[in-house]
Length: 293
Image 1: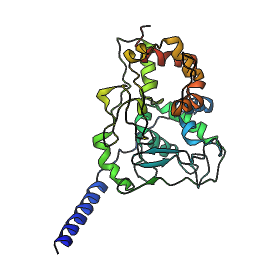
Image 2: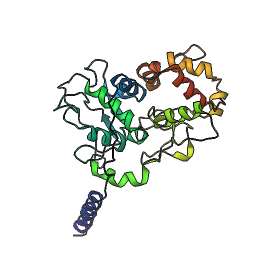
Image 3: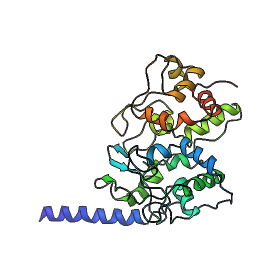
Image 4: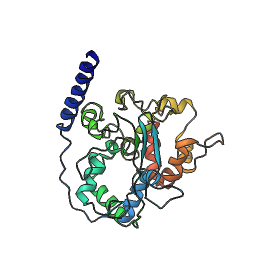
């Protein structure tokens, strides 16, 4: 009888928690300015933002998803984002796309897991999103179904994110600093915004939220079990990084000592930073090394 009472109390708590979570609101849709999307610029933004690396498998159809992101909460699989109306995002509206990318809310009103870095994409402008949308609409459709996430209870209960978000979502860290030069500010925007370097190089708490106060000090216990180095100016300079060799490494993947990036950083270079404009790589170096104009 005592066990039944305890079990009943636990079940009641779960039900109460579920009801509480379901009643927590998600961000309402934002007003969107109208732009004629630039497909070419959108394709560049997709590279810069890491969309290609996550949503395109080397052995699969482009943008059809399937890449897994392993974490202590389970494995999250990137979905099909081609123009296929059934298996991709072909049936979405531009407003659906904006709310998903910038606010982390699906067209059906469900919260996305923060494995999708919408917290960083929140800094994208309406024009950026119009250009990205134009690029996405040009992707040939793929009928490959999206793979379901391999996440156990309680993390499989997506509405639990309604409780997580008010406590652990990060604030926008891309505000400009007038005392810094334009290169530094653009670099900060790229690193802390769409390029989302902080997603790996900023420590996280036990709930998977970013520890904003620690900055880019690296994460010794990444969600996938690995570790990332510090990207503070002091740490980079102590390891011998300069503007020139940092730009070269982000372009080629080759380190100053002749070695090469490994693991996920190798993929970042191959699928993203190798394609960036030299001016943007210079901006990133200016911010990370805290350089004057």
